[in-house]
Length: 251
Image (tube, helix red, strand yellow):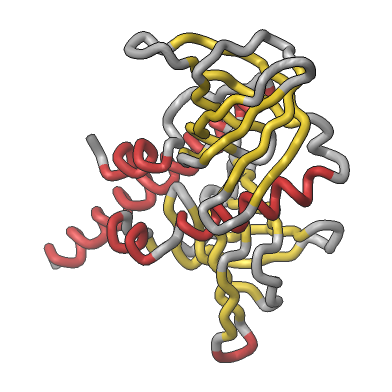
């Protein structure tokens, strides 16, 4: 297994998505307490298996009906809490236990609830992606790719990728960004190909010399197609760098 496969497995990025639209979105493995309730029914205790900004996969002691209206409360390890209306998309019993896995989609996530979801993800999920242990375990590669980014309604701006991995990138920009800003990224490892699109969270923004800013962005949402293109671009970049290094040693 390559280090890319190991990384994707450790982050839960190599499995199939759980929800209709989110089959094309990256999901992040996490283990958090989840309280699930519905009208006229009991409140049950479960655990999350993975989550993204659109929904969550949960482990529950009882089966959920497809399209069943729910209320889901997630309790974060840092004291945060997320309470949202939701609906069950699918449910299946585990082969090795009496528990069930269920895919749950948050309702009205494009409206006022979206800031709540993004805040929860920033606090509970984004920061650990780039903690020191992850940095030591999964190395990032140096790159010099152009990237276009945008924050909320601000204009699109140009930057450079300083280094990158399948779980995040380090940018060089002339403009600073606020911590925990939700960033839309368009990376161009190959100028002749369409950009690789992803959503990230600003984890760090440090001023460098000559008015440059170094911005660390864990990736929290990406289609499976763009995720595969990013992994392929990184692998190709490493192969090219290896050939160049061998050529220099041969001279």
